[in-house]
Length: 422
Image (cartoon, rainbow, N blue to C red; front, side):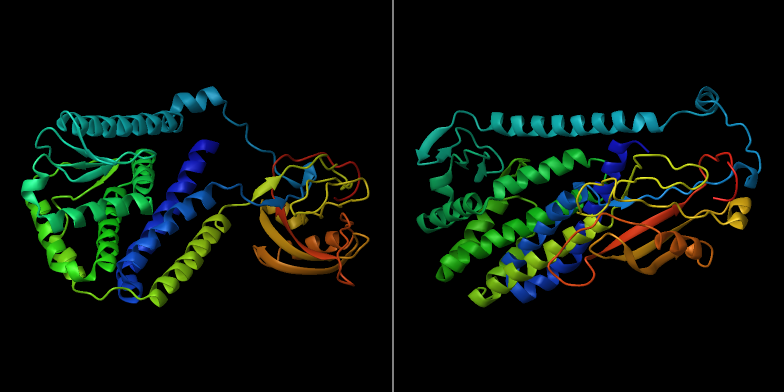
């Protein structure tokens, strides 16, 4: 598979897993930490995505030569032209199709944002960072802009809301700006464009915006605990007005579950202990999600610097651990490919845990994993005892370090036997 498509698939799996985790935990988190703590759970999504895009760990690939006479003659492979003529090369069109969908999604969002801006009419400055629309534009009040946020107010702002309600509405929008919700919504819009093919992402992002509004409501009530009734009346008036979704902005949506927002106002304000517990727990959860997303990637095989000979001569291979660059002092004898496995066409993987002393000599061998079991372990262990790896001196006495070495037994290109078994 193409590297770009594989990267997209890896990111899609990480996004799906992180979103599923948040959707499962968001409601229990409300009872533990309040709605503000539940909103913090969405930090697991970008953490998992970034971890999935990081380079995977490398594995030390030890090539194992196989004498040609052990293998049955292979059938001639079909030419690339005949394979392409036999079927439609659908993989070649996946990346252009994804790019076309991403551009179409971005264009649709840009048109939606432009239509909203056009409906505002001539803006009139209402105060510092406040602007009042010249027409009855749906979706107001709202805050738009990323680096230079502006709070947009409806044309009938003074007539629709009382003085106390106007102050609470402005507190709501300013809290969006202070919390960085505009940048979070821009990141959500970017995800919507990049993963336009994901069937569950629109529903997931609606719940993200829902939790965002609930958290902002809770923040306003925490600052004005005695204004719950006035704030509920302001929400009701905003809900009764028509709404127009804004991709890059925060507004009081018409379709927002008003009943749930009113129920949230009845709950007690989260205590400082709950907020601290929410921050610590979500931080650990986001870090764990990122580690799982990164560890789930398949390891990259490090290509050998010199191909092994058919007689099993030592070959220098690229290191996988965070140890110094390979030097001529290191040698690794390729394992002997079991003749019965080669004749039967059996391939496999043996992962060894090696204890290496200060001189680079292997002093301990342990089989961590073997697939299939009971076929290649003996050959891998016999070869490992003859290896000399790059020494790495550490402060602890005795064994210098422990390293993990996957050995891939694969029949790729049979080589002629130059005398004796490999």
